[in-house]
Length: 306
Image (tube, rainbow, N blue to C red):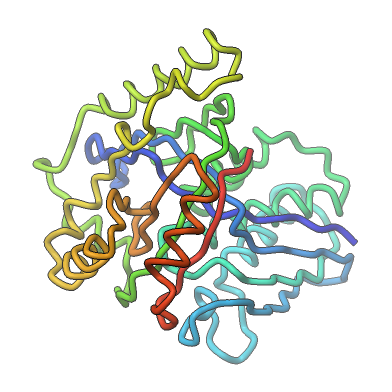
């Protein structure tokens, strides 16, 4: 038996540079894993089979491509396992227990992280001996964020997501994740359809933050977060431009600001948003004092992890 943790992520920056000739968009992003996570367990088996379990998810949530009949062959976990088996010529299979805690289609990368954990776990279970680079290359054939999740922590990500450069892990930050209840069918595809050249940037926001991280790591040996200043000063996400045109999303952000929750940032492609702080006490106080009455609103306390 092998276990793997599949952490969620936030995008500290997400800039769309242009549209590539292959139809994908060129991205510059700094990504960070957090301790909201799924857990996958693997056993040897003659064929590939997934058993899903659900924890602390919205009632309407379900696994991506799960049709209610325990048929998960279009799920990213199944695709990752099948592709790894094909690429390596492995003859056996695996029984995979997928314990879901990360909300689906939220911008937190749960599906991609599950796929990456599948590649890591089966690499160990099947004793394949593949490197992280090997696994990231296989993952990039399935989904754009999977390569990042092979590495995790703080990373600079570019291309369509397949180019991952690990960075020194940032000092621990605390977060409140709020899942704004917007149901957007085929969300990522729809969001990208709204992107045009007026939304493109040249990557300067990400480059500036990247320089600050590298300077902090070099000059302070990563021992003090003071050199970084307020992390809020560097955060940017191109998709917020699209979301801010949606009345319901704007209404939710406006309402949350009235509760003295400012500086909310879109998590990846959303609709989850996050508040980030240096202080655990700060986020717990906001959760207890400002959000205590919102029992129907999915919200999580999390922290950044390497």
